[in-house]
Length: 326
Image (cartoon, rainbow, N blue to C red; front, side, top):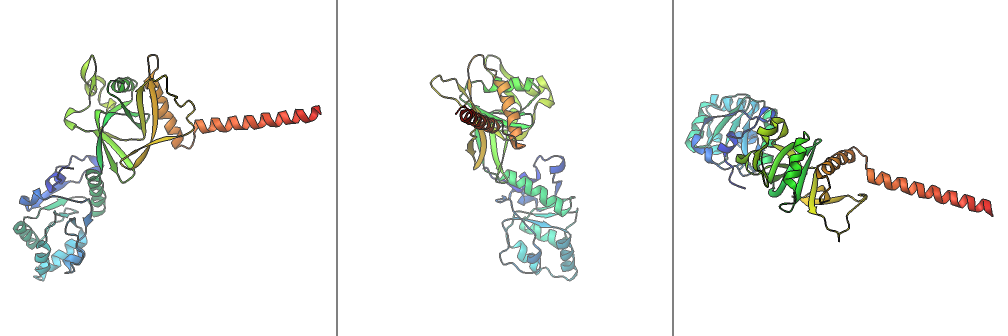
């Protein structure tokens, strides 16, 4: 992962309920400082002079309690703990509730080139949002060759060899009012340890798609903004492959198949492609079936149970008639 700095944090393009609303109050030369971990620190103990196990490599968040203590230190002319605080290099200090740092704090921040940021959010709201944002930034990630679409609310990642028809299938799904997330290169991130979030690997390319024989098309311009989304959780893998007559394909689906991506197991299907097969309809059905599984209804297992009950009934009936014929 490339270096992530305080300036990158300020410039994060976060909208609505994710926005951090950060502005820089001082220490601008230090905006190039690197943030190396997604954890935060509330420096209340450090302000009182206790620096054992101080999280100097974390972002320091100042809420109303820390701000009130800073004001007391300034009134009493005690700046020794602040000097010791700024003798350690930490990424930045962030004040919530639109609180203003004291003059001494700002002066020491400028001298040590430590960025001082401010947000108008409450401390609890800000902490929740920045942890969510940093978790995404520092999440393990990999780029996969495939197409990510949202079908009936399920994030479906289409995989397969080049030329097998992934983009064509995705184009037909968009025509059927489903949504495209990314084509060709999908960046997959492991968020919160158990959620795979997929998005386009190259933001500059936007929601474009390459169709052989047609060229590059812009899905947004052709189908409107309702046909796209920026990211989606990956909940189902569909591997497309050329039909192999020598291969035995699963015809019942009673045994679920999974693939491991970044330590997360994702349900997986293998769909053979040949002329005459309507792949988009198969993908739609797979997505609806996956939704049913999440609701606790497994069609293949129910079918197996029905067959077993029928066999048991037939055996019982056969035994009954055999006894009556004796």
